[in-house]
View 1 (cartoon, chains in turn blue, cyan):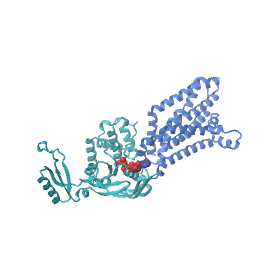
View 2 (spheres, protein in one colour):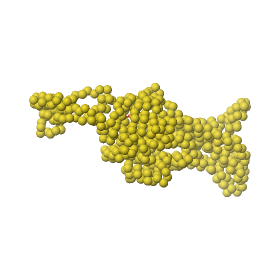
View 3 (cartoon, protein in one colour):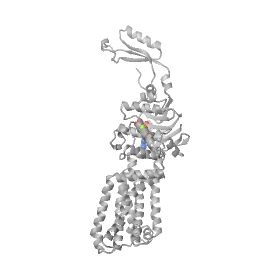
Length: 242
Length: 294
Ligand SMILES: Nc1ncnc2c1ncn2[C@@H]1O[C@H](COP(=O)(O)OP(=O)(O)OP(=O)(O)O)[C@@H](O)[C@H]1O
Ligand SMILES: [Mg+2]
């Protein structure tokens, strides 16, 4: 536990000290603010809190698809390229601890995205609205769950290669596919669509913004996160069989 | 301390190690020698649990490097060849991180930090970003990292490469000071250095062990005699800097006969005497397919 904490803190600090993180975050925040001020607020008639919450959550979810793979791309790929993985793996550390620490460190930074939702709602309060905080909380939670899945997927992409750009590219493709596949299936493939829609993360975010808390959704998000982290660990272990 | 049996490692179709076996006793300082590509780094990486062997087994302190790799890694202080470090961390910050990772008790971390910083002469650079360090300074941070948990076994892959002569002597004396309580396995290309700081040597050649012996045995073996005769245009007034022609003889008898012949032919004798066998002789006889002897 101690080692995991040490590793995760080092990981988190590496993200925080990297200028790239802040450039990305700045762009994402700017985009979000712009969308909010010029699109969501006017469309809501400056009063429809429900609409603001729903749109805010969707915008953040979509931004996460871009932001998180770019955040996680260097986590393992760069350690492989620079050789620091050798230092890490020859210390008494387990592979899954490394992967979990990479996840936690990046997730801690990704929180700067999904935590924005309550702040956006505070903006609504300041402009005279009176939001229902239950749906705000459940939507924030759903965004956090989505961020978890995407972070795990990004770490997995990073574990598959030693080129961080390739990892970023792969992460973006996988994230887009995972988030949008359920919506891209033609409607006449009904069974496939039904199966996939139960794993539609965007829909889960939308539902939670309406105040619906579905524990199976939470379970789905957690199990996907763990599954991707498991694959990432396997991929790290694969060096042993080369 | 280290027991290696029939270790093999294949990279794809390429065989880097082919049935390597050797033994390192506790408290020894062992030099691991070999030409480029001989398989030194590969062996050390297997011992440090970075990768498993393709066949065979290695135990460190009685623990198997594959099945009990956690225990092995706790015992070892390992310094990889290229000394990869996190450039975005400061020296103390990095060493503290490594100490925690290696399970140094939190109330001992600061003391351990001060110990390795002074052992590796990092006082002036303790607050520097690692990416701003020179190669040799980085090397010393890597060494400090290997020492921080006071491991019983040190595995150092070319610990003095990139160091200035001054620091080389320092590292050598540091290793000498560690000997006895600690076991050290270090790879190097610099034979005089191995001769000076190691108690034993293992020579690996093309993935196989070519020799495994103690330094005392190498240098204490049968003696040879050398005779150096000045070249024709040698003038006594120019001093002893002339190279001359060197010949080696198996007995004092043969050497003195040769010297007498040369003197009677009117040449100047520069040197006659016993020759200590060096590690270089052994290394060359094992590694170079055959060197022409004068
Ligand atoms: N990851 C790898 N993939 C493929 N071949 C490798 C790999 N690592 C090493 N080799 C090959 O294995 C052989 C042994 O390499 P190794 O690094 O152990 O040599 P070395 O004795 O440490 O050499 P040097 O003195 O140059 O450091 C070399 O021929 C090298 O090309
Ligand atoms: Mg090497």
